[in-house]
Length: 367
Image (cartoon, rainbow, N blue to C red; front, side):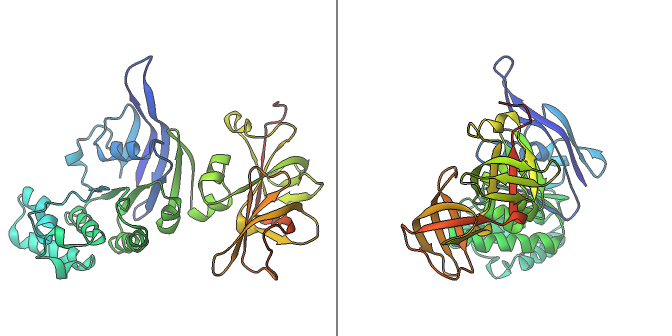
């Protein structure tokens, strides 16, 4: 178990100090792939570097299997690190790149051969053992860097934007490969990325960061379906927001009145922080959020009136961009089982699935 408590990092001295990580707390279980996700500058990489011992801790504690790691030097933490840049020695073979850390530790040659061969086979690199890095693809080079991190059997594997230098197709292939490797070795892994699709695809749990703070932790599907803030809703996938008035309900669910008179049930009600409440337009109690795939589109019925601005085929679905009454910006609809298609310029009515709708409300009594 990795336990992070009130982890804080400040740069500079008062009064000009900058807080890059602000009292972050979370736990990671043995064998779990835990992803720290967020935009650039949100504190996720700084958090990873403090866990690795590469960045001094300003406050809080790092505990691993009951041992206080907060001030332990990085070389004593038994942590494997994979960086965005492969950082391979160009003059050494794949085998020697993987073996480098073991040789510097003075391990016997026979044991080095056994361990490196084992890891190269697991990572499907054994056929490339005698090759040099320049002859490999980007994905193969990244696997070599992972092999180098795994070969000395670390207690934790830390990966900092490991796929950022790969093209889109190779990123998809490599994220599946990283997940396979992590499961096969059963190692506690922390993964940093700004790519929400990448995080959703490979993670057991996701920790969403914003402005140095941890804003939500949960399984990918939970964070997607029940975002705890407007930031989380907006950052994870696509989201539609509609001006709403509270029409009933004071528990975890409620009803929202939308412009035009439509009443929509919402499975979840979330009270907005003062910082996010300013995003609610004047005259509204809050915002109703619904994902594109949870909006139905038709020619008539109860719902929000709009007009199709753009129609795009996604193969298995049609994506409509709609100018809709009360929407913040254009609304997006992904119609997977539509009985008919709608041309650009067509008048339509949008209806939200109550089970997939979240109502974000200002705090009672706030302006």
